[in-house]
Length: 258
Image 1 (cartoon, rainbow, N blue to C red):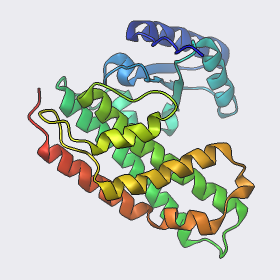
Image 2 (image 1 turned 30 degrees about the horizontal axis):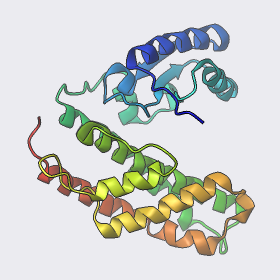
Image 3 (image 1 turned 30 degrees about the vertical axis):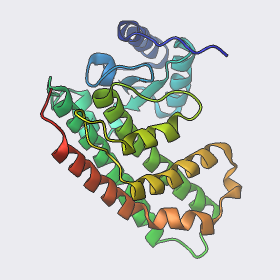
Image 4 (image 1 turned 60 degrees about the horizontal axis):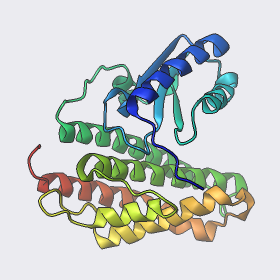
């Protein structure tokens, strides 16, 4: 199968306008706001999604609207549709331009990463609150809920690493092993450009969460086992703390803004 042609940023902006028209005409959207790298808040690259915030779409119509947008977009361009009324405080402020991003790329990157870390904090806090009230052993419903949090956690970590790879390295791995290769890329120092982002112990731990992400995306929920999930669930807070520590060390060791 031939590789998909990357979508240029200007073409993605034009598609955002078409998406907004569709959301207003078919789903009664009151506001549609493109945000993120498509409008210059971050680096647009071949793997970028089209980020749209929407207000006024009825909850029962939300996923139908998302599906209609997917059908409108060309292959190779995914949509991230955010309900503005349900967005977290930091994300909502960024979408509405209440905290304008800097024109300096690394300062901008740090602000975006801080937003992602706030979302990871929320994921871990919510999961810990659920774990405190778990039955022993957890029900199938609880296991599926925990699995979803684990999946969200790794996705958030990966999004941060992708931002670093795009903005600082200028390259993001592609292909069948892109997720694992991104982790490996983040363990490597780039002399004169950046220090390594992950040390070996955290790299190995994140590989476990990546493996679970792959399993969860391809398995039925009834195959989940508490004995296998428990180590990932219990180590999540310390993994996030370690991730934050290494990101801080990374920023402290970075050369000055280019």
